[in-house]
Image (tube, rainbow, N blue to C red; front, side, top):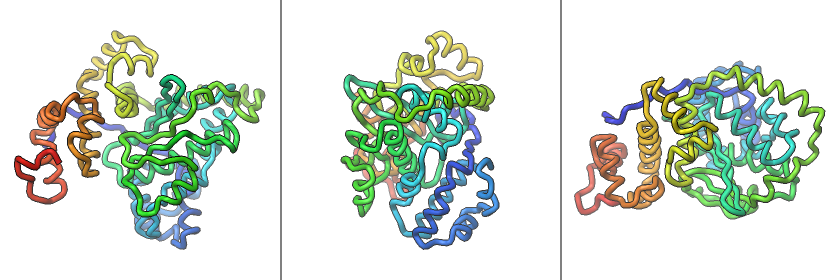
Length: 352
């Protein structure tokens, strides 16, 4: 049994509109959408109304069944490639009419941060390079990498809509293992794609953040922006889950420091500590929980322990091994062997 103290996860949901592109993609690949929905435990009538709530866990199960039914390992990419900003509802419409690309991406991040969709995003600038990252924060989601593929494809389409069709990133990172056929990814993104990344995202020239949004209509902005502000204010997000989302989005960008989280949330360290204390948790406890979840995912991808330690910000593999043992009661190698259903490796092979 895991020894780490876990916070109670939220029940993550999305709107059907965010998954609607799955059905025509199934049709294009010769599968029966209704049969696939039922195999995932979803009644087809659920997709009749784009405003219906769909459990995020059900989306993961559906992604698994879609890949199984079509044999297409790039299924998530194909779904995301056919989506655009209007498919994410009011948030997308407000973004389309924001003053600058930076403002547009911030609208998306702020809306996601206060929702219970089970995902998180983060915009970062480092010198002349910017990155917009996307992570699945809901636990135990099937085929999460397919969901990530779809989200990053949508993000690429979003940037093309904001900046113009000629825009392209410098590179793309995806969390999935390398597919057998990489050509669909190369054709869609048109830049090098890094597979097996800790955090997925697009990396691009930071100068684009200050570009005016292409085809922006200020009158639409005046009408739509207040509606989104009201919707965000009425969202059901809780502070602990918001902090965890920020931590999970930052885990691939360096140390999980209080200062970096405070900057992302717009609060000072004292306020952060007091608000977390009200929920009976601490910053260090949440950071360990996020690291533990990320470590488990990387172990199941058969990444080397030294690589995992470096990705999670540990100075040495031995420090990661000690931390993991304190979280789970066993070593990373033994935990992975147990999950894979094989006998634990001998002492001399434990760094694999």
